[in-house]
Length: 336
Image (cartoon, rainbow, N blue to C red; front, side, top):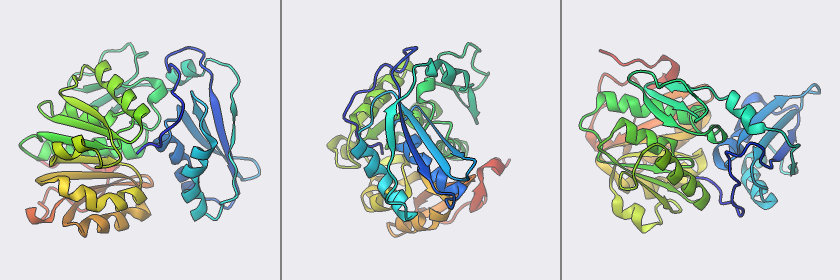
């Protein structure tokens, strides 16, 4: 789920918006995986426009994130506290400041070509080519591209949904996207299962506003996809709409584990749970947290350093032959 910010974002479609940069430098002992994990705090949790991590000539790491609003230092520090603390880097101070004026968003658009993930075709409004035949097009502006389909955690969810759609009938009636951010997963669910009602939930009102705008831009009506501000399942609307046939939770391993007792009761008896935002080495701990709530792992999809876990109620029974335990998403194919 995204961390609330105290200042509204400026118009992300303006050609020359004022941009702010958050920069941290990490010592050379930090591994590539660890640096990528720190970058993900910005790309997945803090509504950044763009992120990068770069090994410098002296072998230190430079991690940068761009924002179209000035991030609160206290919020940045709170979000970095746990992952930096694990690495023994609690004394790292981020640099926050204005970035020089350039048409950064135009450059970002040029670096954001259409992205094909299965049938889902993600593109910005700057793309003029028509959607490929048989695809499910989703428009996401270049300013929102980071932290959406471009990251393995989101790609894994999109692939998992399409696997479920190919192998499971009937289509789900109710879908929940918990921690929706820009709502790319909620919108994709609506495209994959056109008869479903989707609930997109985030604890950040700004993210929920972006999600609503994205739904309108993609021709999804409010009665088809409802966007709600809620801290997990605390919101009455979220609880009353359950149980859900599919629940998507692309957050991080720690919050996912803590959420397990609250989430499990809202999964339908024949439902599917897709968990993401999990580093490969964290997957067992997350799986166990949900197994303790009566769920069973049906498969794990791995893309690089990241794992997506697909689970169902254990009462459903054994995993069918079409599912083969833990898989690399790059190698997953549908069997005839």
